Image (tube, rainbow, N blue to C red; front, top):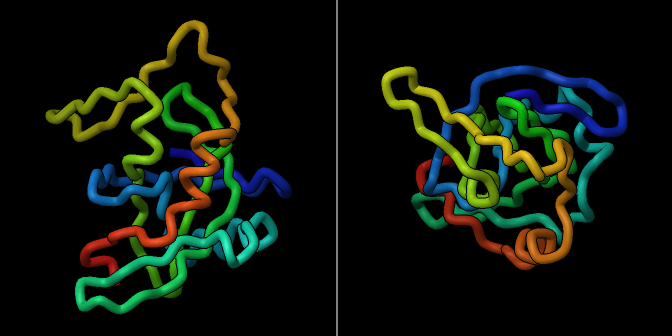
Length: 143
């Protein structure tokens, strides 16, 4: 997947793991979030989600606008991270709005492009409200 800062154009292409237990869109490593300068694209702190560790500890999930490209699907989305995170995850929030194909032997997630679907979609309406209202993400084992 390619992650791009929509303000500066800084980008990186790296593999991401599909995690259906993560209900967000994209979870980035702390180092990637900082290297891309995503603090400049952050939502106000009162709109950040809260992660919960296995031990019940709560921690803020910094949230920023990014441009994500997987296969031929490119869209504006929200990426999250927390201090010292090393995981790069693609969550249910990203795949639920696309036709996805899991290619087990190749260990790949493919996103099918619909012919009528515009190549760049924006996070809008119901999806934005869902992300804003989501205060507690259950991120088992992330901390």
